[in-house]
Structures are given as C-alpha cells and as structure tokens.
Image 1 (spheres, rainbow, N blue to C red):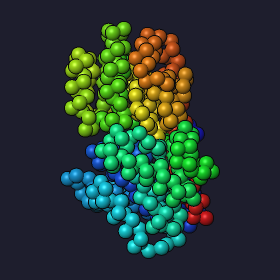
Image 2: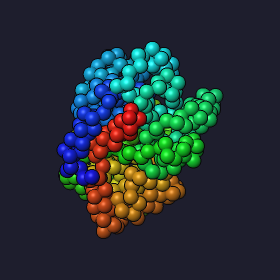
Image 3: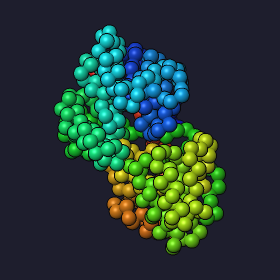
Image 4: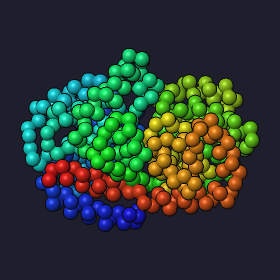
Length: 386
C-alpha cells in the first residue's frame, strides 16, 4: 500500500480498534526511545504505540530506567514508566505482571530484544511478541564470556521451548527464516510485518559534488563500523575524491576514531555523533550511497530511510537486509563483507547504474508505512483476543 494512502490505513486501524474487545495494551521493552542506546527496535515500538493510541487504545509501556531522566512520562498519546536497571528490569516486569489484575480487555506486547521477559509465565491473556532478529554471535561481541554463554543458552535453548505457542511478529521474511531455523519456532507462529519509514525522509536537496557514502547506526560491535572504515579506506585508493560520514554514537567511538586516524582518514571521514533529524535527512539526500556493514539486523531501517530520500544501498547480505534492500533494484547486497570496497568503487563509478538504483529505492520506499505496520500488528493481537 503506497505511502499516500496513509489516511485509508489509519481509518482501517480505527475500525479494527473500535470492533475489538481490547481497549488497553501494555508494552514491555528493554529500552525506551530516550535511552542513549536506543535504535530501530525502540523507534518501531514508539511508532506502533503512538498510532494505536491515536486509534483509540489506552497504551502504556514499561522499560528500564533512562539515566538522568523522568521515571514516568506521556509521549504521543501513550504513557511510559522507566524504572529498573539493565538487568533488574526483567525481574521487576515479571513481578508486576503477576500482580496485574486479569482483564479480558487487556493485551500485552513483549519486545524480545536478546533477553526475553518470559511473558508466557506471567500473562495468560492476548499477547504477541516482537522479535526482530536472532542475536546469535552478538552475545559474544557485547558481553563477557560467561554472560555471553548465559544469554545464548537462554535465547537458543530455554526461551524457544517457552514461546513455541506464542504469536511472534518479526520484520522480514529473512528474519523469519532465521528464527524458524535457529530458534526452532513453528513457522505458522511467526508473522512478518515490515516497518514503516518516518515521514520526514523524502527526496530533495542537492547531491554532493564528490562521491560520498553515509552510514548511520549505534557505534557498537555488531554494526562492524571498524570493517566499514577499512573498506572505505580501500575504496579511497581507487576513488580519491571519496568522502564519507558515519552518523551515530556508542561506546566504540574512541576505538573507531583511533582506527580512523591510523588509516589516515581524519580529513575525509566525518563522525559527527548524534545529529538532528534535519541533518540526518540532509546527509541521506546528499550521499551517493548509504552503507551498512552490520552482522545482524532485523530489518535495516537506515537503508529504507535513505531509500525514501532517493539514496541506494550497498550493504552486507544478511537476514533483515535481504528485505530492506531489493538486491539489484534498490541497492546491492554483498555476501563477502571484504568486498564492500569493490562494490563501492563499481557503483560510485557508474552513474547510470546508480541512477537506476536510486529510482528503485524510491519506488520501494513508497510501499513502507507505519500505518500499515500498526494496523497489521494490531490485527494479530486482536486475533489472539478473539
């Protein structure tokens, strides 16, 4: 459904809500949208919650605390309680769930982001689970060996048995395949609902006069920005006018800045950290390509954001990216991450191919709306209520 049909989709959601026995939805998530490490998962939850609230539902969210921020707040029509530490929040949410009065008009949405909240143990009413991707190798990249083993055993061993009868919602067909294969979830229990694209991401502005690449994301190991920096440096040898911008913040900043310096790239690779919405849109519009070297993604939101601005992708061929990018049409997927530089050079040097990919990116982005996402996810929750 095209993005100019948002009004139709909004009315459909309102009609679904009006006919449903549900009038309240409670979301549980690891992080809040205001968290310094918030990313695509948090944006997804926010957009769904705000649209459900606009359609007439009472929506609340429960997350871990945000440093130096209010414990309770209202945001775009829904309420948020942010309390508990990074690990303590899971136990707190479970205890709150056990104490919550049973109501046939209440539904729960659990966001399983690596570590689950074990909602099947404390909520027996209508419930769906957002599971964007399998974490797999991410555990070892982010945690100590002991904690990584614990996280991996819970994700791949304990939790799948508990969630086999749950309705799982993921973002892409490729992520569904991975969830079914690696977590052994019944395929009929896993439903695909793609994410939308923020309305501010539109084509316009001026393309950079020099070949340019932009990448956006948290500066954390799974995004593999170290690999991207090295691949950009290799491409620079062939395309001497190349410039690049890496937008985002995270605990790997110091290491990445040191690597950038060691590559002699301080002058042509910019790392501005967090930027304003307008600056992010301008960066997408001016870049010749958007890149992602990520190891794991549920979707690859930055790639479809850039697509809506008319910027094609060069990205790793992983689950999630395979749906966020129409390979050969809206961008190029690269099976061997060490070949990213080669593809950068090819596409940057071929204006005709780049223009065709830019058109394909715009056409694809037209099909992705948050209204559709909110409508289809609520439809699944409503089916559980029925």
